[in-house]
Image (cartoon, rainbow, N blue to C red):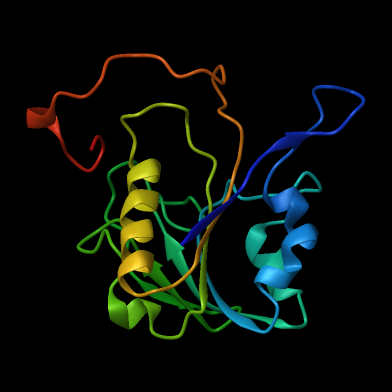
Length: 177
């Protein structure tokens, strides 16, 4: 089961967009008394500049038990294509699992201590990039392990419309499924 917390506009003005993360307080009941795994990177910030990990770590009745990093890692410090290793976050003592290296899909062991899996990454607005496929594999893993999956939506940074050619299946890869 997946839940998408979509972007919405506040009125007025019409260009004042709230992301899924900006609306997290409205959905607190989904996370209350739960162990949370977060798939994220440096782009998951609220309109106030607060990172998703800080927001969830500051919720008194939520426990963040794992972070998962896509290409470039949770902090966004790895170069394009650079292998990212799993490690322990020294500040929070939370495991950070790499989903860009030898493992692209969360394993049952990685998900063992998670009640809800949350995804918040600003995509680049193109089909041929790894972030959307990291979400795809994570959704599969959550489904296979009967873990609810919550997507904190963000607007398409390019134009907001869908366009371009459909992938020819013989060219399918991690940057284009």
